[in-house]
Length: 238
Ligand code: IPE
Ligand code: IPE
Ligand code: MG
Image (cartoon, rainbow, N blue to C red; front, top):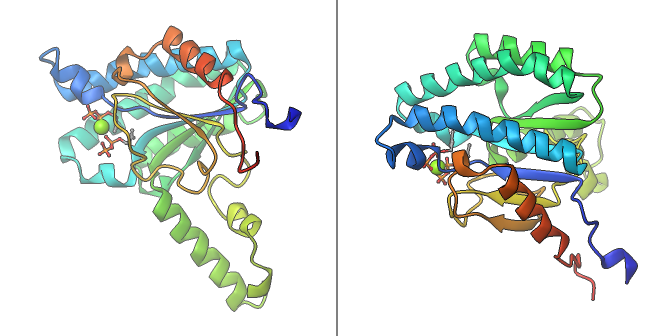
């Protein structure tokens, strides 16, 4: 019975930060103003994790499918990402936060990749919280890449197909070094996963907030975690 009870604080929270465009539209502002306002919600989510003792925070910032948006919006998002990274370097170091990424980050513009590499390197020894940015991330792409890497090992004679277990697959995903998310938050009231962590969310608790991401602040994050603490996770047991 004891092991079926939830830990009151999730070790790993994942967030689909959705609704920036609608937030801006409702105010007669360009979509990029919504993305800019969303950056403040990121800061509050990071602070809330530090205060509550969450160890991993994965943020869906740009999906594989988001490359299909108008080039103007992609450019604005990449510029904001670069600015965000420039400002977070110091802040993350001060707060003992480590930055990591998942996704096909090789597809990002060189200026973003440089900033990413710098912040990841500068914060690599930090221990209070790991913030994982999902950038150019799609779960099907990730599983495809993992399958290719496994196939190459089989082809090279390094791996026997009979030895492929679910752990083998998990080890070849971008998330290999992180625990699975315990709790998934999606904002803006959409009830879908949009190609996010399909494998890793198998047993996550789900929370949908009607608020758009720029309106989702620390109190909302705390309320979501209170909701989580009342859940009973069963993992298929009774
Ligand atoms: C989420 O907000 C941010 C990204 C996907 C980059 P959206 O840009 O999807 O905002 P809506 O969903 O159109 O309101
Ligand atoms: C999911 O939001 C991706 C991110 C939050 C980065 P989208 O707005 O792209 O998802 P859909 O199109 O509503 O499914
Ligand atoms: Mg959206």
